[in-house]
Amino acid sequence: MTGPNPKRRGLLKLGVALGLIALVTARPWRGMLSELRFEPIARAQGFRRLLSAGGTEAQVSGAQIATLGLPPSPEMAALEPSDALSDTIRANPAAALFPGPGSATGILPIAYFTDIRCPICRQVERDLVTLLDEAGDLAMVTHEYPVFGAGSVAAARHILAAAGTGRGEALRQRLRLSAGLTPVHLRRAAEAGGLDPEALARRAMSDDITVQLQTSWALGRLFGFAGTPALVIGRTAILGARPINVLRAVIDAERQA
Image 1 (cartoon, rainbow, N blue to C red):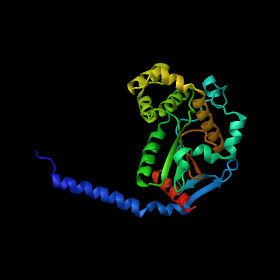
Image 2: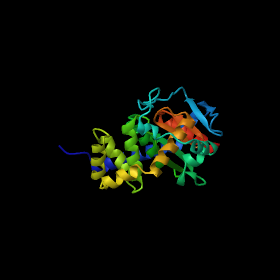
Image 3: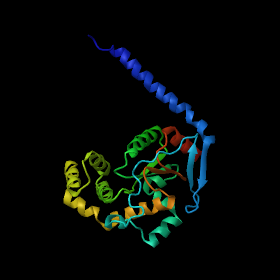
Image 4: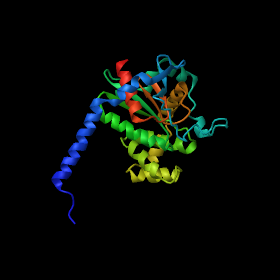
C-alpha cells in the first residue's frame, strides 16, 4: 500500500497555511469589539476589567488562592508585600506589570499570571504563543502567582531562580511533568535541566526572588486576581481563560485606544 503522493501532500500543507494566513488577515474577531464589556478598576487608575465578550464568560481553573480564610503558611506569608511596596505599585502599576521589553514604545504589553498547578494555564499559554507569533508588536511578561500553597511557592521560586540562567521556562515544563513539588522533585528537575540544584535552591530563597514574588502578589491583589490564569493586556485585566478570538479582540481594542 503506497503513501500519499508527496506533491499532493505538499499542496495540502500549502493550502492549510494559506487558509490560516487568510483567517488572521480577515480578522473575524473584529466583530466582537462592539460586544466587549468593561468596568473601571477603582484601585488601579487607568485600568479596566473585561466583563464579557459576545456572551462568553471566563473559565477559571481550580488554581485559586488555597489559603483564603485559613492561617497562612510560612511560605505563603512570605509573599505578603510591605506597605511601602504596595504603595509604590499602586502609584504606578504599569512599571511593575511590564518591566523590560514590555514597556518599550510601540509595543502592546501583556502580563500573564500563572501557577504551576493551574491546568487551564497550559491552554492559555498555547494561545499566547500563537498571538505572539501572529504580531510583532506584542511583548509578554510572566508573573509567577503561586496561589495554590507551599508547593506552588517553592516551584515559583525555583522557576524565577532558573530564569536568571535562561532556563526558567524549561524548568517550568519539567516541573509540570513531575509527580510532585517536594524538595526531592525540585532537585531532580533542576539536575535534569543541567542546573546546580544547591545553587538554584540558594538563589530561590534570595531576597531578590522574594521581592519579585511580593510584587506579583501585590499586583494580583490590586487587580483582584483570586486565581489563575489572569492577564493584563495593555490596560485591560482579564481573570480566567477566554477563547483566543476574545483575546484577539481585546488586543485590537487596546491598539485602537
